[in-house]
Length: 134
Image (tube, rainbow, N blue to C red; front, top):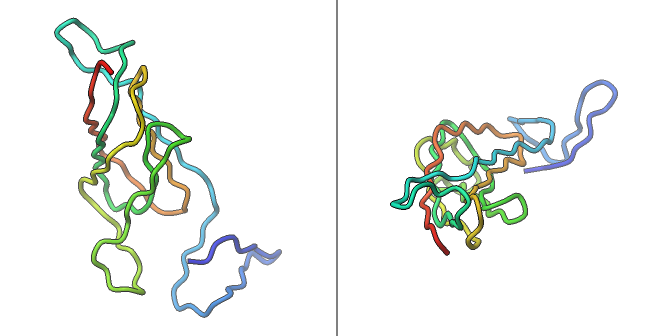
């Protein structure tokens, strides 16, 4: 993967390596942050209590890439390559992807997803495993 090529005045890019298929796009950040986690407790609401998301399942549709964590400052990259042959592109993924979330207890229990590459991402569901109390 080659990054950070400049577009000239004619709208063209000059590749540094030979290629038969090229995907080009503009760099941007796409962020998704959930609202505070709400689960029913025997004592009422979880709002305002300390909680921790220890595991997150995301359901993707034809997606590739991304970073997951408890906030924008603590993100882990999604493992993209599965069983594709070496040298071939990473396939778009559909279905559930599960990843542990680093971090401790906080008020709210939010989770954060960031896409830094111009690759497709469609998130159909966010399913957290939550611990309350701390």
